[in-house]
Image (cartoon, rainbow, N blue to C red; front, side):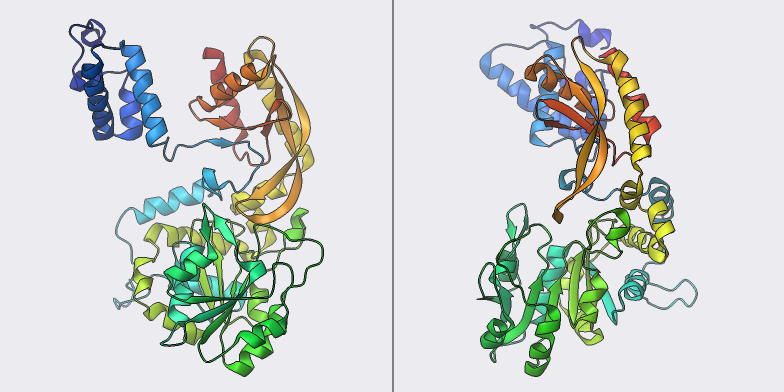
Length: 463
């Protein structure tokens, strides 16, 4: 800390301006911004005056850091995800390819031909490239995009509602909570449609839907229960079974496909997951799904299906408030281009690079991490490579695990283990693992830059 700050005393505390200019507070200012740090220091200064004492400068910095982390969080800080959850909602879900992202941000940082043709000078549609790509992959007539799948479902239902036709039929076994306490019935209320529940939690038959249809029915909605599984005596009505009922009654059959699978997951040693195109093939006139889960891209919500219904959705007043910006659209297009073959998918989309890693590669990576950690471990700690199981996460493929490799950290006590966990999370690039059965596991499946991870872990030597 500069001398003019260091020489201050409890009688003459440093000014907030001096603290903000000091080298000690520079990382805090860089992370949160000068105005935010200034406000927290003013708040702390007022509290000091009230209690009549002044904390030391180191304690002041520590207290300011703790308050900001607690009240705001660390923000979009790059971390190493070694939790064993590939699509971790709290860590931004799908990882983006670094080279592709950097190139797109460079291009999109200036003016771009977003809604105009650079060749003809005529007005265009910002979604045209992404829509064409997703239609080619799914066989749908038309497509449109919004900022997430919950928004896609809400917009779809709001657009289908017409006058007295405001009822949407859903199986009781498909009334999902999508995370963060957001539930399908809440989304339906926001869309101003009335939920008509049919069947039971575990069994819903086609006849249940048929009996519920009346003059006020706006749609039948099927929901892929991608974030949980019901086992035992269960029976759900398929799109194939509902198609003739919906067509006979003139009611749109819709599908929320959830995680948005666009490839054969069995190629990566995982169970079959319904492909979005299957919903179109089996009779859904509208299908919604996410962009940042199994599709492996940025947060977005896709709506695909009949040209007439997509046009109706695009005319809805709510559509403009939910549209995507230029950078996310460009990133989605690049991700969708990678789906042209399994080879490009595994090479250009980090989620599928992670799924394609061999056991031998994971074993070698874990060994290097263990070798790097051993010299910098605290006294009484040890590490070794172990077999581990990772999961997809973010409500995708519930109950499904994939074999992986991890580094297992053992410590003399749980308190010591937690202190070491804090050290890892305090590194220049925080390392996030998971504590399991009295040990700390660092899973290698999601690591896309091993040299950078190893360099980061060597920083433990100075802590």
